[in-house]
Image (cartoon, rainbow, N blue to C red):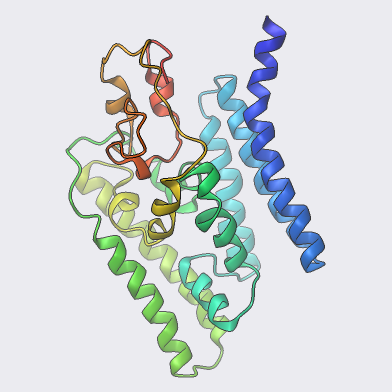
Length: 278
């Protein structure tokens, strides 16, 4: 019995690792570039490790993966390799017709990937949330605001910014993209921290401002990996709703559940359920 339980705990981490390893090998062979093998193998292994640590009930499991992936993307790819992994970098490579770096990252993690793991990127890998989650407002103190429309403005502004650079035939575009990455991250962190303090909600930036969610939300509606509730065990205590940083009604198994596409798979609801109904 114990052996069977141990095997079950390895299934989900193994699935996550295999998905990323498949992407790693495919891109390595298709692009003839060893970097992609290292890049996606590292990210997949980090995510699988975090999921496994959660399975064995390690308290900081998700934080481990956040910092493993987040610092790699921010420091190594961004600061050292000068790659703009923000949404502006995606537009830049898309307009130049180059399928590499940010375009591949967005395709895997934020456009098609969410069909499998929803908004797991937001919970386990985002370098902005990596910092914001260290703030003390881990659960929302106030009702959710109806400010979600702001994300579409920031999304449009990022598109307009890069489009204007191309239309103006600006020189040294790669250098500008690097500075946009530095300044953009600074603005994100400052805005996120201010919002978190004002609204007493670590994830306020994710809910209202982040332009990347425009890609993530529609795809995550069809996600294969979802938090589900065993109604026969649920006692409607409401602890899962109080623990959820994104205000998701996880007791409703319908894909149309309240704030369903906001779930970041942080598993806070699972950890706080007294009846193991989730």
